[in-house]
Amino acid sequence: MIVCLCNRVSDRDIRQVVQVHGVRDFEVLKDMTRAASCCGCCHDCAREVFDAACATQPHESAQTT
Ligand code: FES
Image (cartoon, rainbow, N blue to C red; front, side):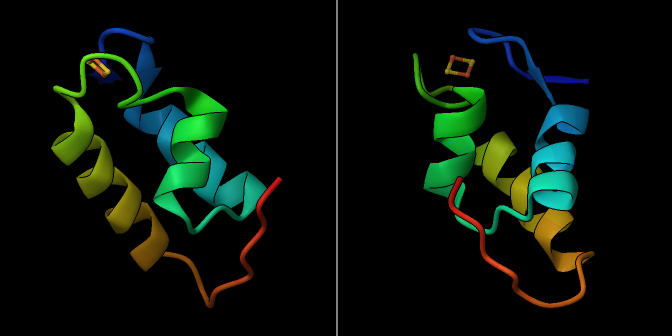
């Protein structure tokens, strides 16, 4: 499912950033994927997918790159 139409970011893309890159900061997610960085219409949905993805991960191993 495409979450961010402006930048063609899917829920899968968001989950991958959390799972593979260990991102736990929504601002970092925005920088990496550009989700919610244009019109902002997708912000709430992107945040919801991001939070759900974070909740499925073991413990915080915050990575900012
Ligand atoms: S739909 Fe995501 S920034 Fe516009």
